[in-house]
Amino acid sequence: MNRFNLTVSVTEYNSTEELDDRYKDLIQAAYDACSTSYAPFSKFNAGAAVLLENGETIKGSNQENAAYPSGLCAERVAVFYANSVYPDTPITAIAIAASVSGTPNKDPVYPCGSCRQSLLQSERRFRKNIRVFMVGSEKIHMVESIKDLLPLSFEMKES
Image 1 (spheres, rainbow, N blue to C red):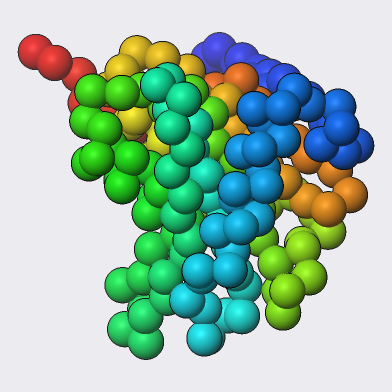
Image 2: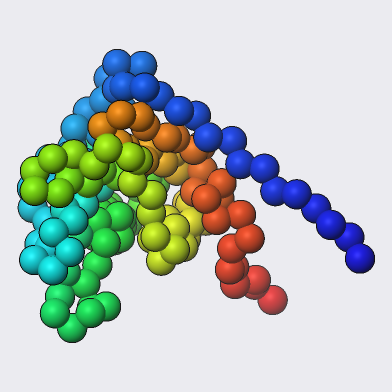
């Protein structure tokens, strides 16, 4: 038997002032996307914004459905839209934010397992890491690749 450890490196920022302008703008876009959320059941308005390699920013918000789990998270809405409109353009970063009744979530918002797998697929598709900003009003967590959040992930191996 062998045992091994997995290590994840997370950078914590105390405010957006510690970030360069493109990431400040990306985080603002994620907060802006919260306003288009359709969350009549959870009241949890999530927004995501992806930054593409060509400089475009694409926003998405969570869309709930009474036939749960038919809705989609903000991250997948943004990623799928970006990949459909710009199919040959890699995503370089994503910011994820949330609010409840218009008040920003205090703690960073982390992507669910399905969103992690979808983001990882986009990384693999373009062979480029996606920097992930998980935003809260009191701190921001950032990882350099979605692989940091899903280290033992499913992958189809080509034969």
